[in-house]
Length: 230
Image 1 (tube, rainbow, N blue to C red):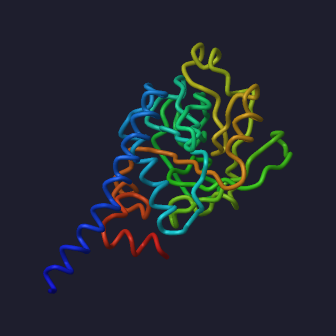
Image 2: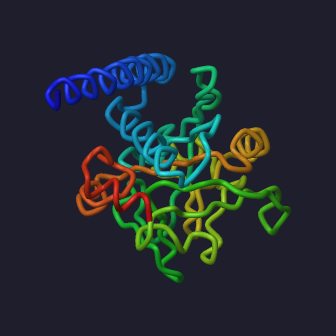
Image 3: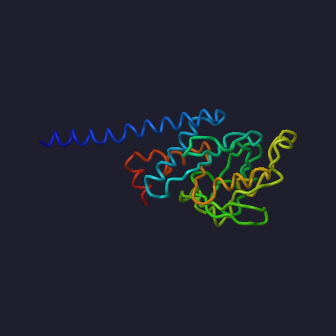
């Protein structure tokens, strides 16, 4: 009897898991096709982080997801905004990193005020406001010790004149921020409006400590499930 119960339970779990895995794989394929310049492994991690955040009740399922790949130089497009519900790409844009993070390549990241470095990890977007940089979007870091000081550091998404792709090609790098993921002024309002109020931003870097320890990556592992739930 016990063996039958176990078999039944495993069958139920299998019936629940297989369709979800198939849907996740289909979404990855669709979004990867829409944004071929985005490393598929980075996109897969971003979708995994999103699913972990939702499964742990950290956030409600967002309709939009932005992915920033800081392993790419600032002279290339490295910000992608996706409509998850419809499985399509909304924006592919250049994005600035903090002046403390490096020149053309961002190699240093911090959660600390005064470093002028960008932060990595998973962020939830919040309210918009008009500030010194015009229309801006506040972000809350969801990863303790990695990016949870984002709000007090005033790490926001905004438009900036120094995000000029043509000038970047001439000078060898994009202009840099104080840590904010700044975008071109021409697209700032559209990008911000697509991401405001409870969407997600996943900022990737090849940082071993974060990749191995993030509460939102590999959360199918028991210890990660426990961490994500707190």
